[in-house]
Amino acid sequence: MILVNNPGTWSAIYPPLRHAAWHGLTPTDLIFPFFLVIVGLAIPPSLGGRSPSQAVARVARRAAVIFALGLVLSAVPDLTLATLRIPGVLQRVAVCYLVAAVLFLTTSWRTQAAVAGALLLGYWAALTLVPVPGYGRADLGPETNLGAWLDRTLLGQAHLWRVSRVYDPEGILSTVPAVATVLIGVLAGSWMKREREPRSMATGLAVAGAAAAAVGALWGLAFPLNKSLWTSSYAVLTAGLGLLAFALCYWAVEIRGWRRWAAPFVVLGVNALAVYFLSQLTAQLLVWIHVDAGHSLKQSLFEHALAPWASPVNASLAYAAAYLALWWAVMWGLDRGGIRLRA
Image 1 (cartoon, helix red, strand yellow):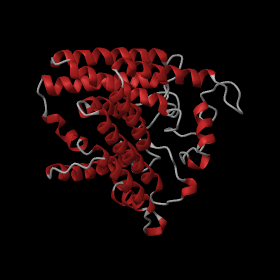
Image 2 (cartoon, helix red, strand yellow):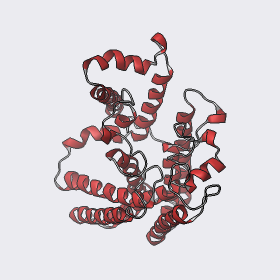
Image 3 (cartoon, helix red, strand yellow):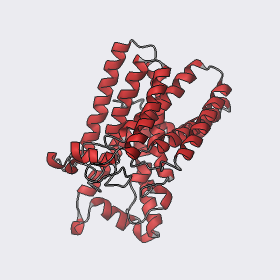
Image 4 (tube, one colour):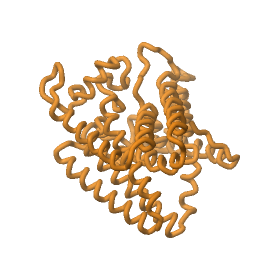
């Protein structure tokens, strides 16, 4: 996401590094659900064996910290409570983690599977069958879908994503199927704790991932794939692809013993929350700080250091790559020092 969120200029970006305009799927649309699947996969090994009361308290504290960090990103650099965006990426991560972790600690895997299925089917029914007040029959348009109406009604337009103000891609209702995405990861993580043979783990994850991806793709023919709405078809398809990707990594690292290729990713992964928060915060400050002729510091850096040397789209990508490299170096330093910044 650091690469995607920080081009030199938003007017020149390679198509795979853009989100789908509305319905559809690009490689960029896989990043957030893949992360939520990993959140789910991590819950059983990180919380298993703890007493439910202690674990729930720990989960609630971590979720509160993550949610608060999301609000900080919404508030910086210009804190205006009247227009503070309430939903957001970290806010969604916090809510999904809280709900999925509490369900893991207090229910059986059968209940968790039933809840995930109910959330996906219920969301599909809500968006396709429930009339939208003021608009009539159910609709999946950016402004006229049920989730957008609910966000505007409960949160107010001023507190939604400033690019749109008529809907929020991390809104209230669309967080429901996102919880199911995490629960799919939880179910896979619980199964991995029971299955001890590495090849069986990789095969089982791959089969489950392929099956989910197929179901999601078929469902998408009737209920379009849409990240902003986090449609049920999108949730199932991307969770399936996430499990396939994890199975491939597990096979490469644990079965084949190919570990060196993963080292650069480990540097980012052990401080994933820190690198996302700090890189987003810094990027916002680079836009807020103005230097010569009223240009932002980011714009000045891009136009003087990179724009003269490459085509617009390549210069824009080079800026994003350099920004990612900078944060990788920072995280490498923390990793070398054994520093782990966690909620």
